[in-house]
Length: 379
Image (cartoon, rainbow, N blue to C red):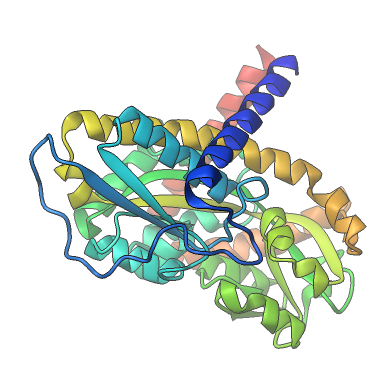
């Protein structure tokens, strides 16, 4: 426990120092007015290999507001920028574009594929819906037993299943998964009634991402899934276009959804998965030492991302109760009802879409990592 507290303290120090340095050089950024961190780039052709002594620019876009002390993607971004520029002696300059300044998640993914920008952070399901359907499988419901379980499985270097998927993605699309990480469990909110069992979802219009397993999950419980762009969600909730939504604690707080939603069920129905994408042609154009620096900077920033996400989640429920939300924790029996309804329904769909063997191999890999964690805990 002491080591864990020390690790969290180190994470906070990293984030604070990075943010202070960043703010000192770039000017204050706020959630309410997420001014451009750098001027939006004009469309440019994909990068081509250049001499080892030349300097490089990496444009990094993401959709969430810029708030490094309250939002783990922002924390990742400022630490990644600081580390990469330090490791390369400034040979790679990182330009940050938060809050969808140069495109939402889908647009930013397309820009990375074209080489217009070099890097983006998105929900993994966006990449699946645009270019790589296999990746949808990590959004199946009730898949991971913990954040550690998810992190180990999603490791694109340490888990052969994910490494193979990454190699396929690079070959098919020219996009590399720099990392795939757990953003945090997703939960149900709505304005109509407390949701205690799947039956309470029946008839509700629930906003989901345009990720098929998420939509099928709501459908399995008798709700109507309504895909709405993230940047339009607050207004859609405010004007009753939808009754509710499902999201991570971080997003519920960062986007002030508590202002327009009354009920929260801590359902943990899906692990939100984030993916950082980098243009493969640009990455391979770098000299070997700079490619190594990108990997190292990402590793350090990932530690901050994961630690920050855990800290924010640990404080979230108290914050949301203070903001006036009614929070409900399903009993074990109620939680099992959600699982019994959603798991077979979504699995059947995924088997039809991706093939029974692929789904079976995937679940065996997920379960093997879970068994490994349990065995380690006994030793």
